[in-house]
Length: 301
Ligand SMILES: [Zn+2]
Image (cartoon, rainbow, N blue to C red):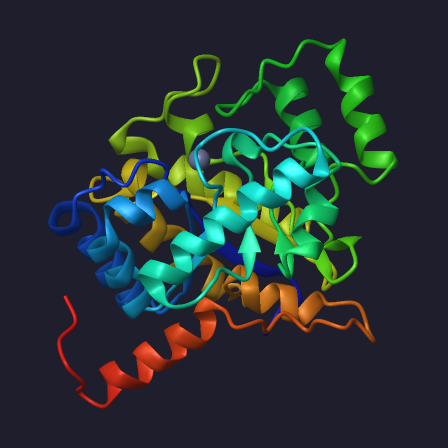
């Protein structure tokens, strides 16, 4: 049975110090062996300093997305944000020959001016707002299970308001002309492994992470929601790749499908939208790379 909810695996690259052989290559090999795509937002500064690694990712089916000119939040005047996006795109164009289709703000930090700035610079999606799973939060609080958020009670009304008003929703929605928001699930890999008040999952407990992500998928399982997860290359590869294998295997067995963010942007573009999520983006490059590798094309490492 195929379920409506689409899942996207994403994970940012901030400084580009991830090692090609010990981190990025095993990550790409795992994605290939479990048969799912991934979207990696990358800071332009890291693209510029690590062209070989970024080209490697693009050639191995990864959708490379924008993550800022530098790793600093996007806030302030519209024109300043536009200039930063332009600068980011210039670097991508120079190194990869194409500009990214979408964007995620560094630290997810941004203000309302980001959306018109993205629209004016031709982006088709943003993925900088978080979605929450209210049911999970309440259950965790009541039963104090292993993922306990340790949310103070006082915080719950605010969470409820976010949910009721639609902020915190897992449904894609337009934020500016031609730009769709693809909310990212609040419980990322950082929360599980490094957040000081988080559960500090050890290597032997990785299935607890997939348990949580599977529970979120089931709670959101309707065709209008997306589950955008964060698994940062630096944190996940190579030591925690087993988590991806485990989660994807379970999700596929329950009928969930995996997409890149640009694919989701196309799928959820409002009817009659001037942009259908296919700007001259890296997705074209990716398909090209895939057909090259299928036809036994040149080794591009
Ligand atoms: Zn980042």
